[in-house]
Length: 327
Image 1 (cartoon, helix red, strand yellow):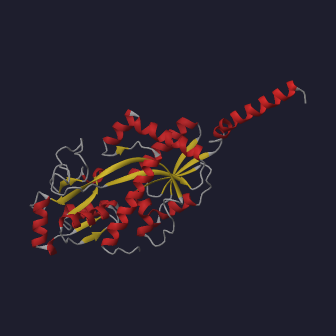
Image 2: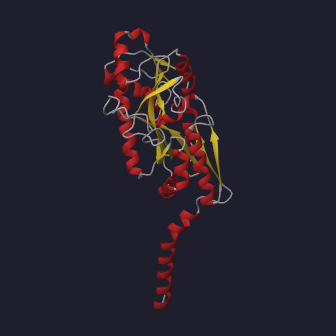
Image 3: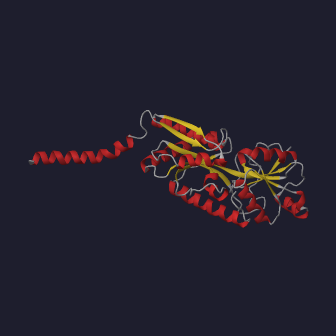
């Protein structure tokens, strides 16, 4: 090989090396393939809405079909396992919530590690928790509630929407911080718990702001006592923070995220992460989410991983403190 041929060959190798990453990235998503966003809960919930938003943005941005599949059952386990077992090729994602991170602490059958068997792509939104009380009781502040509950503990009950939910953990923490011993009554969802509270069958409930604040707006059947956030909600400015209500340090939220199967290539999850960040910065999306008391999240993957680790640690501590056993 002469000098001119050697230079041409070297240039070809260099060009190939430069172009290879671009070709690898351009291969995903492939035309004709469908990206599936699995929601392990029924349609209509916040994680379903956020999953559909991300699927829509994927379709618009990447030019391929992106659909949501609701694979329900097993308290979210069926859909979650489907994603864990899926090919890590960028065509299957999980749009779920706080429950995914704590599922192995709550369900015996959840034999997976959320930090290693799934790859977190991005958090999408949060919903601060709020404490509401039946309007049938005269108490209007946390201190009045605690005094009444301590004086007559058999006459008070705390509803929880589901065992292991963010509201369940928040209720445990609330009782420990206030020193009250109010029994907890577990329900199968927020709606039946809220209906019983408005009817006076149970007296207290801590759950997501978007589910409870509308029901407590006029104060005729339920009253909002405090929001478990660092600051008051702009959409419910009359509701004090729990710190203002007399429970300092009490901050809880339900949160939502997007995961991929372990082993999904980093160039794919980075592109989807960036898409999520752009989506959650879109003024129209921000306005739409905040109008329903959801707050969009923009943060790095490292920040999300650290946050999830802290949530799991807190959940372990709180569940262990009441000797909770997975069912």
